[in-house]
Image (cartoon, rainbow, N blue to C red):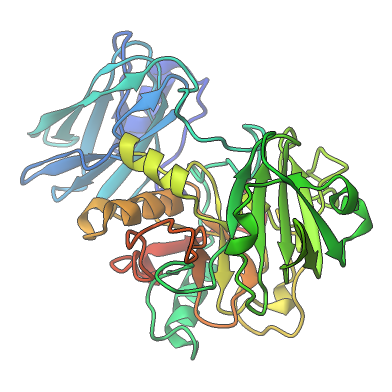
Amino acid sequence: MYEPSHRVLPVDQGTDASRRNFLRSGLAVASLGTAALWLPGASVAVADAAFDLHLDRSSYRRGDLARLTIRENVDFKRRMVVSGPGDTRWHKIAGDKSHSVFVAKVQDAGRVTVRLQNRITETFHGSKSLDLDVKTGYPHPDEPFLAYSAGSFFRSRVDGAPVHHTATRRFQRFMRRHRDQRQYAYPLIRGTQGNDWGMPYALGHRGDPVWTLTGVVPSPVSRLRTVGFHAPHWFGDTLTGTSDSPFVVIDRASGRSIWAANAHVVGRRQIRVSAAGFYDHRSNGLDTRNPRSNARVNYRSRGAIPDAMVIRRDLVDHAIRTGGDLGHVLHMFMVETSSAAGSCHPMVGYESGKQGFGAEGQRIAIAPHVNIDARGLSPEGEVIARTLQNYGCYLGDNSGSSSGLKAEQESRGHKVWKGRLPVDTLRGITWDDFVVLPKGWQ
């Protein structure tokens, strides 16, 4: 992930050339056998005085991109030989004097071995291996639904992303000094345990009631007035009535994700709003005003992605079962963005009068060398932190207070989390663990 400290080779470069170039940078990559890849996973790690291996999932599906982090406390003048089954080809994408990150495309189950030796003295420091668990049959019938195409920003990882080092230092300094942020060194989770500032959310199906909108409904999404969308009968009870009172509904029947703000139930399955939008699930999940969008119907205020605005319970549960992550980019509600910085992909607009940090749409992520398993997080916290490391988040809104993420909103009759996702779920992660990516990177 992120900016490499050594030369990164293109995937299609020959094995011999790859080996020669990696040796020049203190690294060798070997491809062996036919069977497996490494399993980023769960809390799988092997350690001794020389180095340890860390995998960011407990299992993969064939074709997934796997990531292996190697941490070391030995001489930097070393050669690493990373071997895996089959035609697996490993490539180093990041590293410094204490860690290295390799990626490869998963093919089959088996074992990955790392050998470490000094490249000058040839002193052998030992080898370690990890077993890989590769699932067959994709997608699994129990996997929760994720909208948009595989190439969408919403589902794009940050592997290999460059780091904007100057912006990273500015971001970290800003987060330490801003008057509304100094108290919290980590993103807060909102919408649980009596907090009403989360995201009311529902998954709609064809058999669910049809809801319609009234009030300020922009013309590009005027069908929300007449055709409406499907959502469960209890959906209206989750609306918070706060000053922004938003909601997100993923309507599988219409194939759209709907967002609205200042939502209040005013009639039988009718909701008055001050803003609304929707995105088509078959698209790449970008507002039609974004030059990279492939859909004419997608429209949402300033181009924010509805599905990124909520941490869903079903995705958290699935990630805990599989040792994975949420599978998508998150939308950060930032303490204060910078109007002077404007907006960038995926956003198409920005709020005025803000004098904070970053453009709306700018992407940040937990750096790849951060060992999430060592931060003392709950299973739910590890899932969210892995998501922030693998996919990152973009600055999407001004929060009006300290920065945070919105969880699926709990209400008196809709107990979603039952104490599992408190406001300080990410305590143990700090803003200094984050890096800033260049504007518009995907």
